[in-house]
Amino acid sequence: MKAVQQPRALATREKILKAAARLFALKGYHDTKLEEVRHAAEVTTGAFFHHFGSKEDLGFAVLDRHMERRRQELEQIEQEMPPPRDDAPLERVCRRLDAIAELVRRREHRKGGCIIGNLSTALADTHEAFRQRLADCFDEMAREFLPDLEAAARQGRPQGTLDTWTLARYLVTVVEGAIMLARTYRDRTLLARHFGCLKEYLAQNLGS
Image (cartoon, rainbow, N blue to C red):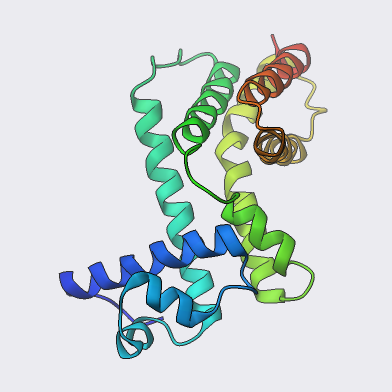
């Protein structure tokens, strides 16, 4: 991927990524043509290929953009929430779940599913490089929970019998599955109810 420095070039690149992300979410990776992305972004063929050498290159950049925006939005949401207690790691886990729920609420007007979930379904079995990158995305989500899960486990299970990494990945599984089900059932309350069950499970197994 080529380095981008000029403001105009950055703006063009962002237009392309925004258009591609929307089309990937609506149509899927395989059914989205580069010409559609170029047309939706209102850029020339030369401008497109100045930034992205291939559809694969574009797809990786869309993932990078998605994860960066997710990090920024969750951080902003958490800054708007009451701060957690320093000695309450499980409270911080629940706070992150609440932030994710708020992020989903703010995005509910957008058409199309989760770009990570969509690309995983389309590419994980057929494209090894994408499979690895998507696995990294899911692992990044799990690592967001891991330090506080480890701290909560030390408080609630000092004998150290809990596999916190598997638990962190389990949280991501519930989060991503609940988001998909809430969209499929068109039920705005489903996410909160499933997250509530998850919090109850954590309290029962990690509460000190």
